[in-house]
Image 1 (cartoon, helix red, strand yellow):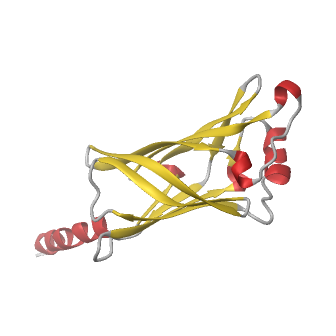
Image 2 (cartoon, rainbow, N blue to C red; image 1 turned 180 degrees about the horizontal axis):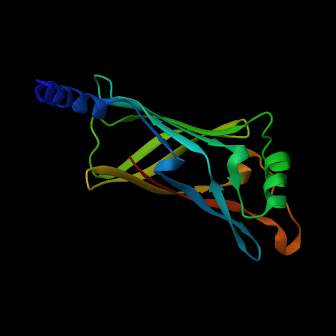
Length: 178
């Protein structure tokens, strides 16, 4: 009797769980890249981030929301981290970098998915399109994408002097499995 009950429970609940909203965090992958100065590159790592994907509505539309904690951005240098969080990005007024999109994606399938939405950095919101590549590996989905952020698009200063001056581009890569 218990085996029959367990079998019924598994057959009923497993499909429902796969239809549920999806929340992805740093435990499921990485969101990192490179910042650039005149003489060198430096890491930019989001140690804490959240990607939330809603269920598809009756038309197949889903909401996608990404949040990155400014406090948890790291560059491999404590002084640079502190300066970035306090002087470049105003973490007290704007503790999160966000991206929000609505996408028609009735079901996940392998291929390229354009996510047109709005990126907000330091309180400034701009239209932005993220291109993701979806693949299914061993029964799980993997999403990857490379993104270029132009700091001056969000009125961020290019700090530093001479060879240490930061350039106007940050390359980021997302690689998550869910």
